[in-house]
Image 1 (cartoon, rainbow, N blue to C red):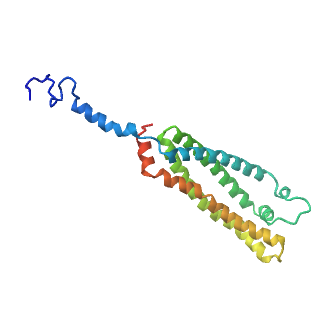
Image 2: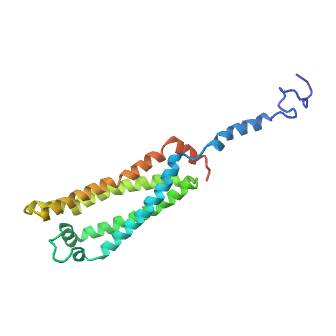
Image 3: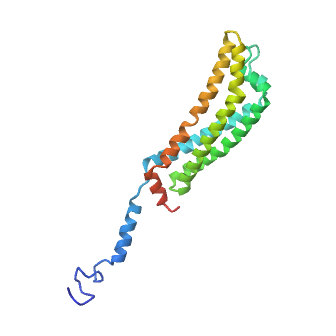
Amino acid sequence: MSDDPFSSDSTNPYAPGNTNPDTAFETSAAQPLRQLSRPTSATVFGALNIAMGVLGICGVGGGFVQLMIPPNMLQPPGSPPNPVVTVMENNPGLKIFQIATLTISLITTVMLIIAGLGLLNDKRYGRTLSIYYSLISIIMLIIGTIGTYVLLVQPLLEMASQMPAGPEKVAATFGAVAGIVGSCFGAVYPIFLLVFMMRKSIVDYYNSTNK
């Protein structure tokens, strides 16, 4: 090895043409971050968040419009009594409960759209908001299922038990079952979103964005 610190000896890290070991270390350390690409699942859920959010806003808007219509106008003239309409007329607590849940749904739906935009733009808050949305939605679905059972399903089942066999009894039973099934179905997307947002590839990618 040459004693000249500026010689071209390949073993001298400070020789012309040789790489500074400190710089080489920094480059190799940063290399994995530059090579990370957005996981396909993050892109898919980013687009789904926006799509589900737009549909959610339409659904919430329709729900508020329906609440503004008097229950007796929801039933066509001359048709047999609708058990669901009857429960809505006789239970003002159901309307208050629906207004509260629709308001929270509007907030979480806007959160979902922002989360989707964040995921597609490689923003760390996209994943964070997606997790918050999932957790809030799951909690609200549990509360909503309990409230729906107490305020709607239970009264419908009581009405059905006192009705003779016929279309009205079928309608009451169907309304009760639909209320529970609808609540359970609403939990599917938040659960899937939460599971994917906790996957290592997505966690590593959004932790490396520094945005």
